[in-house]
Length: 314
Image 1: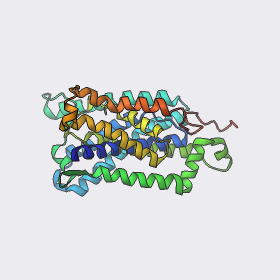
Image 2: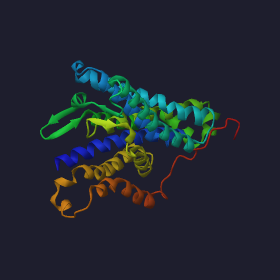
Image 3: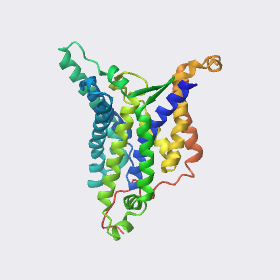
Image 4: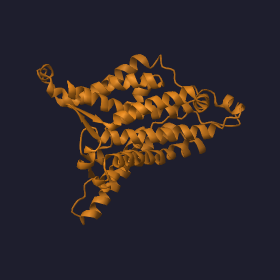
């Protein structure tokens, strides 16, 4: 049971971080389908730091440096979506899809090139190992393994709620996603606010990426991407109604079903069902389809999301 709770919380933390990122982007009026790709690039940035930064620097330095590297990588990659969809008014869905395809391919090629160069041609894998650095992210509390990304997710939730609903910036951001022309008429720079929303989504998506690859393993093969977690986070965001608190509850629900795929063998009654392990791994995605099928009609997305802003349009 402890293991189930542990995995539920860490997977919920990953989904929460990425879904909050999507929430900021869509609240500003930009659909961020590219969260999957942002996660991959964020994971790559953090994994490279763990590979090359000596473990001797200690847990605080390692954790902080990895967080900053992943956030920076995610932010920089999210600028592709911002420039294409805001500045050049390209189709946001197509741009996000292209980002997802590019990220996994680019990360795989980069890691393979790095491994080949470092091994003199003997290692052509897309793996990055971080066995020892990963231990610095874990704090054992009895049988429970506390991961520092759990705390990062909670902090992100609190800050996101405060920013969106208690600050002038949040009010302006939400206005740009609901009625950008009205926001512009009172002096709000819609382009800057949308850039800010997308860049925040890049930061949170990058953090979600590194949290995901360190959740259960100590070696990650980058050609696997992030196993569809970016799209699952989108489902969490929609089910959560673009509201941070509801997103957190949805993340726990989906995190629970994802955790079953890791720990089902610990429960005798599940073993007696004699179902293949892939069925449990499919559960969160299957549940997302069912949940969205019954709730999507009632969901209320920001009115102007996905619509390129034209300053001359009224």
